[in-house]
Amino acid sequence: MAKSDNAAKARRETLRVAGPAGEIAVLVEGDPAGAPVFMTHSILSSSMMWDSEAALLAARGYRVIRADTRGHGDTQPPAGPCTMDELADDTIAVLDALGIERVHYVGLSLGGMSGFGLGIRHAGRLSSLCLCDARADTPPDLQPVWAERIAVARERGTAALADSTIERWFGRSFVGAHPEIAGRFRRQAAATSVAGFVGCAQAIQGLDYLGDVGGIAVPTTLLVGANDGPLPDAMRHLQTLIHGAGIEVIPDAGHLPNIDQPAAFQDALLRHLDRVRIGH
Image (cartoon, rainbow, N blue to C red):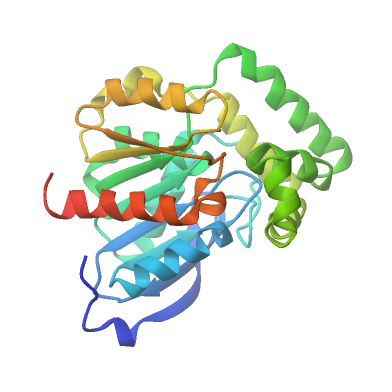
């Protein structure tokens, strides 16, 4: 998308929107008349993980909307467990509050998981999907992993999960070479409410969209870090199930490729938006 003539008038707003389970913290920036892009983040993170991409897209004339997930960042913690459908419904609540009919949706990890639900249940609200480092199901062998993390959070707080989470996302070499970035994400993970983590972890435990992703009919691109464990293979499989979906594997990247390989990730994101814009 070419830079808008109104880009100089771009502004950044911090809003609080009424959601189905409480107030949702929302950041809006860029040209108010630009094509809207909605960005959602991983568990134990917040909208801060999209700072660079939001600035890039706003400079190119897009209107960028970022929402903190339940109990993450500045969004109100949930009162109990939640489902992936309910997290997708939070996105719809923000769109309704802002009077936005359709968005380009960009979701990573937890945000990508709920993005599959949006594509299945709310296609009419989407211009496109860019889903990153996310599964569409949680297989039985991963259930104990999430149960253990939930138990740790309940007993010792989310700070007890921070170090292992950051190392799993980025790898030891990246953490050692980029202590400022690792520290920022470690602090954000530790600041996540226990209720927010537990509620969203339970949504991940119940993730079960794999049998329905073939019904996604909006333009879709899948992005994944090459070093993100089994996810490249899982997302290659998803590409075969979603008609017309594209996939890009980001070399030398882990679970948050926008952080450890930002240039490659941002190029892939812009290619997705350009592909949608020109109708390919």
